[in-house]
Image (cartoon, rainbow, N blue to C red; front, side):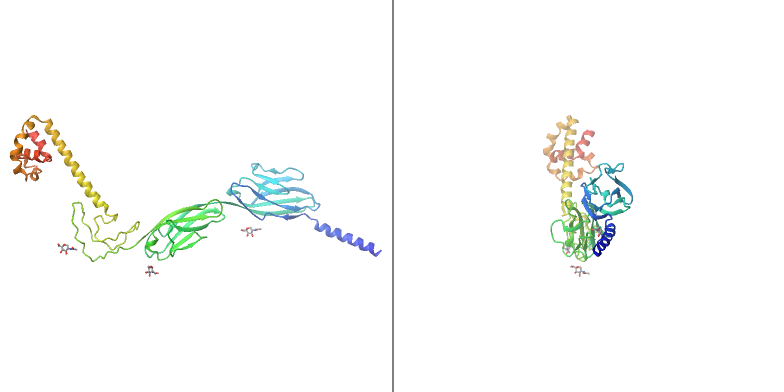
Length: 366
Ligand SMILES: *[C@@H]1O[C@H](CO)[C@@H](O)[C@H](O)[C@H]1NC(C)=O
Ligand SMILES: *[C@@H]1O[C@H](CO)[C@@H](O)[C@H](O)[C@H]1NC(C)=O
Ligand SMILES: *[C@@H]1O[C@H](CO)[C@@H](O)[C@H](O)[C@H]1NC(C)=O
C-alpha cells in the first residue's frame, strides 16, 4: 500500500516537473557570426520542442523588417523582394546569400508554439571586407622644419578594423618615429632632416591583401652658409645674373633639400645642380649663332636677288680694302654710319660674311 502510494506521488510529481521542464527552448544560438562580403552567412538556431508543436516562425532583420517566415508544416516563404537572398536550412538556420556590407547587423529569430511558448533570439552578423585606404594625412603639413613635430595618419575602411604598419618607402629605418598600429599614426618628435622621404602605410585586416599608400615628407633646415662671408668673386659670364648674398633663411617651401652652397651660380630660388646657368649660356650662344647664320643667309639671298651691280663689285674691292677694315665691323652696326662708307662695308661683308644690315642697305641704295 505504502509502495503504491509512493508510486502515485512520484507519478504526480514527475508529471508536474515534467510538464514544467517540457517547455520548448533553444539548444543552440548563433551569437556573433562573421562572414566575408560576397559570401554566405549561416545563422544557426536549434531548439528542443519537447513535445510542443511549432505554429509559426519568423526571421527578421532588426529593427523590424521581416525577411522570411514559415507556418507550421509549410515551406519557408521569403518576404517580397527577398527571394534568393534568404533561405531556411535544417531546423531553423537562416542562410543569407551574396553578402554585402549592408547585410551586417542584428537578426532575430522568433518561434511560437501551440503551448503559447514564444522563443526569441538575436544574433549579430559581421560582414568582413578588405581594407580600403581612405586617407593618408600629415599634421600639421608634410613639409616641416627640422625640429618640428609631425604626425602621419593613415585611415582605412575595412571590417574587421585593420591594423596599420608604417615603413619608409626606401626601406631605411624609421628612426625615433613612433607608430600606433591601431590608430594608424606615425609620430615624429623633433624631426630631423634624415626623415625626409616617402612613407608607406599598410592596412591589413586579414581579408584579402594588405593595402598600401605613400605620403612624402620633406624636412627643411637652415643652410650652412655663414651669412657674414662676403660673396666670393665669381667670373661674370654674360648670363650670370647678379647673385644676392647667400641667405641664412630656410627654403620656404621645403620641397627639396637645400644645397647650402654659398654664392652658387645665379637664380637663388632654385638650387638645382647649377645646370640652369650653363644651359642658359649654351642656349644664348646657340641662339646668337643661329641669328648670325640666318642674317648671313638673308644677306646672301638679298645680294643675289638685287644683284647685277653687287655681282660685279665684290671681286674687285675685296683685296684692296680688306686689311684696313679689320677694325670696322663694330661700326657697321651703327645705323648712322653706312651712307658715307659704302665701299668699306662692302669689303667687310665679303671678308666676314656676317655683317647683317649692310647688304640690304647697299642693295636698296644701289
Ligand atoms: C558579440 O560581439 C560583441 C561585440 O563585439 C560582444 O560584446 C559580445 O560578447 C559577442 N557575443 C558573443 C556571443 O560572442
Ligand atoms: C632635437 O634634435 C637635435 C638634433 O638631434 C638636438 O640637438 C636637440 O637638442 C633636440 N631638441 C629637443 C628639444 O629635443
Ligand atoms: C674679390 O676681388 C677683390 C678685388 O680684386 C679683392 O680685393 C677681394 O679680396 C676678392 N675677394 C675674394 C673673396 O676673392
